[in-house]
Image (tube, one colour):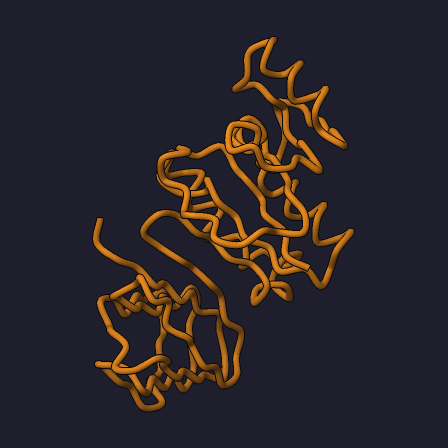
Length: 212
């Protein structure tokens, strides 16, 4: 099952949605953006403090399900939405759009989501995407990274200390590198249709990107 979470970051930064999703979740203003793109709104979730009265009314009338949250709370609306979806659909692949390009504090929360104990085991099913970047997350093991046709650059961002980091089938390689603090191996490139990575401990974000 493929789920799209639409957060409230700038609509102009959204990626092209090339394929339909099975389930659409609007997060606060992201609900309005789904409407503007004439996409389904299976769940609208949030405190909706970024919407005016008319916009809220339209969302509440059109969403199949509305989940409201208080404006003052410990979690962001995106955290609440992700937790809800993973509880109801634990095997879903979840793509989040609108999570970059706006406030940096919100982006960092979204980027670090997989470090939270409640989300860590789902790391490899969570994706953050915008117009220039696709971010996926890896847990220890051996992995093949398939090149996205429109992306030039490949980066590996170690979110934690990482053991035995090995990179192959890419322009720059590593062999069992020990990484003791968060490190970004930026501006690598594919040399074919895929790259290989393996490591024995830690969490890594894989970023495929292109210039604007």
